[in-house]
Structure formats: structure tokens, C-alpha cells
Image (cartoon, rainbow, N blue to C red; front, side):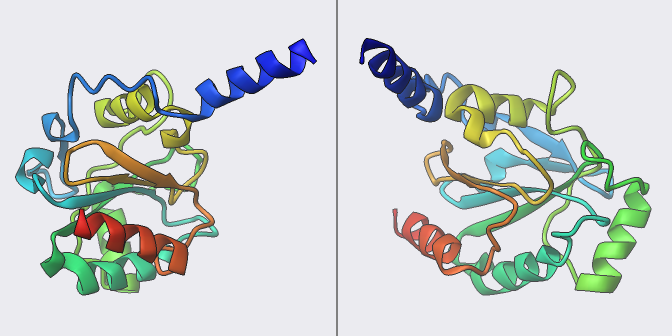
Length: 181
């Protein structure tokens, strides 16, 4: 009984972000874009920012289409989508130019994209380390097309696993709620 109680307490602490101190906000981070310019998150203050690690050779790659639909629908409602190509899961071997061409040609992607970077481990981009430190393991991408939603307050509002489509009711309801916050 006591063993189960301690396990429960451990699990609650493990899966919550109650320990988040947020000495920094998402606005303190920037990415290099796929074209070499800067994507500064401070430019998106008071907006909902959806950061998605992406790859072109993944079973979830068709989600590019869903992300583009989301971008078209919500970009004028203070929602920003940022695609973050990564080869952490060995499904994005291309160069930045190849990735950009693939996304534009196959999915008409015109939402902001970063250069190819690492999103996990010791070489992860500082934004992903920040998300993990402040939101917990739910912010760590387990696979491509993991979604981190930053609320208008600059804090991680929620995360969604790869299998959650950006056009799913669950995801859209969450985004709608964040827009109203």
C-alpha cells in the first residue's frame, strides 16, 4: 500500500509541470529559418505558437497538409505555426533546400520553417531544452510531428503526440481555447 502511494506521488510529479519555474519564456528563443534568416519568437508575443518537429520521410508526413490547412485558417487569428525539420529519427536526410522544395512542392507549405536542427538530447535546440525543463517529459518529441503549443503568455500550454492530427477535434478545440485566452 505504501509502495503504491509513493509510486502514485512519483508519477504525479513526473507527468505534471507543477515544478515549472519559467525564468525564461518562449520569447527568449530564436531559430534560423530554412532560408537563413531569423525566426525570433519575441515577434509572436500574445500569439499562440505551434512548434512542430517535422520530417519528409515519415509515416506522419501527410500532416504537412493538415498544418498548412491550419495555417490558412488561423494565421489571421494570432496563431503561428513553425515547422522544425529534424533528422533525430532518421527520416529527414535532406538539405535545407531539399526540405523546403519538398514541402512547397508536395504540400504548398508557406508557414515558417526553421533550418534542420536537433530536437532531443544534449544537442537539442535551446527552445526544446527549455520546453522540457518547464513542461516536463510531455514536451520531449518522441517522434516526428510532435506538437508543442506555446500560449499567449509565452509558456507551454500543451503538447500533442505525433498521432494527433492537427485537424483533429481534440487539437482544434485546444487551439480555439488558447486563442480565446
